[in-house]
Length: 156
Image (cartoon, rainbow, N blue to C red):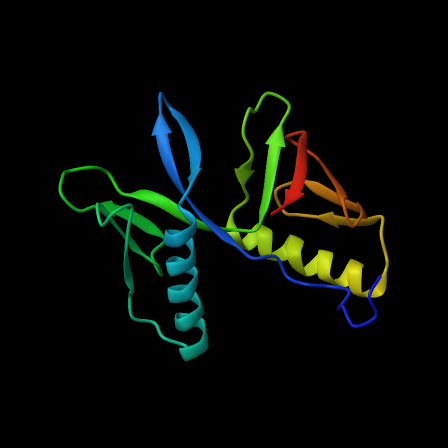
């Protein structure tokens, strides 16, 4: 390993939106360009401590995302708003065909625990969450989750 390279580097988030199809939630990624614009707006809000809503046009300006609200709105037609997430950690259940992003608060907890594990080189850490789920960070590349839902956990 290159000694100049830091042990821990936070992952670069990607933004997703939820589309409801036949009573199932399907999480779809925004394009790289849209995701970068959403991340830039989010970073600006965090740096300035702003609490005013910021709107970012996405998907060829057919939708607007209200960044603080984490909602995506159709511009030219009536459609229910859809949830938007800033994503870094994902899971895949036994019957899932796609990875699903964790809610942001849960992802932030996982990322903080991962940073500590990498920095201190302390693995096999067990993280217990109020939802009843337990995540074990085995090493930098393997994490498992047990609890109400069996899942494979991955970082972006």
